[in-house]
Length: 436
Image 1 (tube, rainbow, N blue to C red):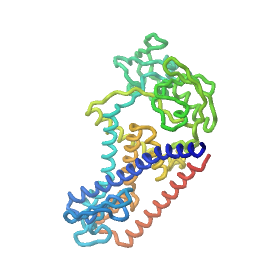
Image 2: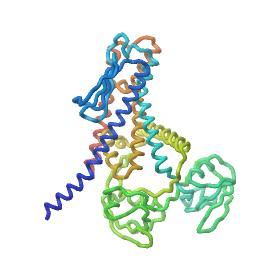
Image 3: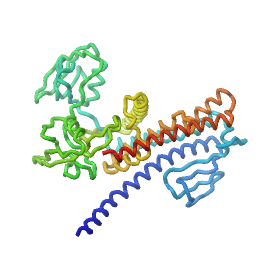
Image 4: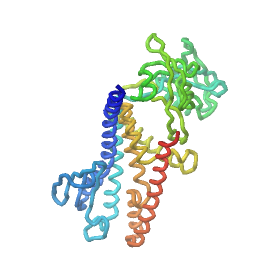
């Protein structure tokens, strides 16, 4: 009986793991292949001789020569590469002898291809699932300046001056631009509509969205799924405390990693009770261990037209780029823990878990990884695309190529930095697995 149960458990585990592992391989492979296709297309259009384009590494499975280029499929599917004539040593008519503008165009095309992929994935995401938004219901502290001006926790903002409010972002947009003004705000409070003359005393807001504690998505195989929580359930009590909004619920879960805590939720007209043990995970911003049970909050969605989806996708890509730089700068200045930096293991782990969250989360994560790859590849480190571009710019300004000794020195510095970064990120990744 025990052997049969063990075999069934292992079979079930394999059925879950194999699709996830395949998904990780596909994501990593596509990110790298798209990057190399970017180099290939611009090299071809710029009449730069491309000797070989390979999908994958290792032993060649099939290959075909078209024109001057050998296209091949190799055994190991994790990525690919492009080999241009005269890319490593200066040869007449080779890549290194081309004008700086042409070389920069070929090199920057790889990162731009990743950015385009991120945009396309985001566009598919918004066209398929719509865009989430926070309702214009506010959460605030009793002693905040907004409370002193007349607003209360849980107020639903209906309009500000002559503007009808449909989401929380509209509140921020109007109030942050109205410093020093008095605006008439209509709110729904305790089922009644009232009007408040609201003086905007400061330029920055302390109010946040008041989000109801409704489950939107449940991670397959997570603690919440194991006790039977489903999308649409309303969290009523956690660890003996009544829950009014999502933040209150999350705060308890975060500090309860590894602890068995009682939870009560409502589904339709029925109440359910159980105990849940939050998993201990690393907060990617602080590097601290926190608790999670594998659920997302339910937020309303609105469908987007093609034009709106394009605009929203462009904004999202820009925000991801900005946030990537912000996080990196905060890590460098110590405002965010260096433990938050992860490497290939963390990328694989995030992708693996992304499958358990469903297609929407998986697409969003894939897009973010692709945009991050765009940013990282443009770092001015000699072995990266950004470093090569910097070298080409320096050579163009000097009107003279760097000597082999200078190039070797720059490349050695670059490889040293990359190896240090890889060691550091691998060390952080391993700590994530071994720390309790």
